[in-house]
Image (cartoon, rainbow, N blue to C red; front, side, top):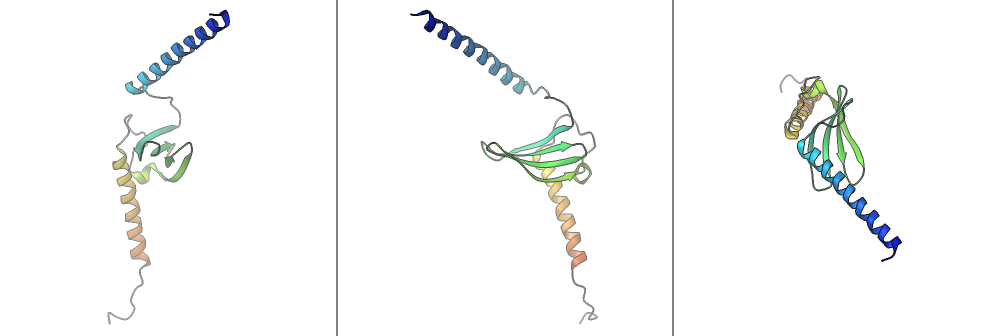
Length: 129
């Protein structure tokens, strides 16, 4: 075998070994659930929809964003506040189950819609006739 071919094979082998070691380290860290970088963002909940799509509740300060993740793009679906969800300002380290947080959001919206419907309903001035 020529020296050039030997060099290429050695280089490919080195890249494969280091790439495999990096992949194994990243996989191990994810499995251990080690906290990722801090900062103002915190994922409160995640609901996978299928293999490539998911919905996230992300806390940014006092706001909570509902974010859809797809095939390479993130889309803001809506937002609310921590108070509207009934969550404390400093939520616990472990995220709440998505269905619990979503149920709180939906209960809040249905309560507001019911209040709006009763205040917007026409009032009969016909004396009950």
